[in-house]
Length: 122
Ligand SMILES: CC(C)(COP(=O)(O)OP(=O)(O)OC[C@H]1O[C@@H](n2cnc3c(N)ncnc32)[C@H](O)[C@@H]1OP(=O)(O)O)[C@@H](O)C(=O)NCCC(=O)NCCS
Image (cartoon, rainbow, N blue to C red; front, side):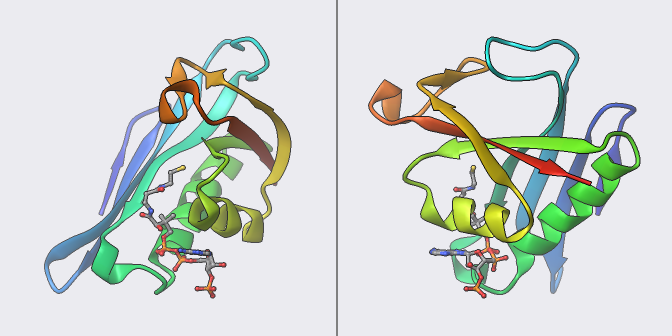
C-alpha cells in the first residue's frame, strides 16, 4: 500500500490483511546544521512478530527506488545503539557521515546517546 505526495511517500507492508510494517520519507528543503537538505528515510517500524523476515529491507528498498527517481542521495539517522536499524541500512548501502546529539530536532535517549547520520548514493 502506497500513499504519495510530491515530496514524500508513506508505505505500509500488509500480510493476511494485517499491517505488519510502516515506513515513510521526509523531504527537507534546507540544511539544518550538519544535516544536509534532501530526502530522508524515517519512521520504519516492523511489528515485533514480523521481524527478521526481510520486511524492513523491502520497505527501505522501495523508498530508495522512490528517492532515486528524484535525487542521487538519500539520508537517514539512527540512535547509535539501534543495531538492528544500523545493520539493515548499512546492508542497503548507507554509510556513516557523522554523529551528533541532535538532528533536525530529534535527540536520542533524551540526549544521553548520539545520533548517527548516514548517507547512501544511487
Ligand atoms: C529496524 C527494523 C525496522 C528492521 O526490520 P526487519 O523487517 O526485522 O528487518 P529485516 O528482516 O529486513 O533485516 C535485514 C537485516 O538487518 C539486520 N537486522 C535486523 N534486525 C536485527 C537485529 N535485531 N539485530 C541485528 N541485526 C538485525 C540483519 O542484518 C538482517 O539480515 P538477516 O536477518 O539476514 O540477518 C525493526 O527491527 C524495527 O521495527 N525496529 C523498531 C523500530 C526501529 O528501530 N526503527 C528504525 C528507526 S531508525
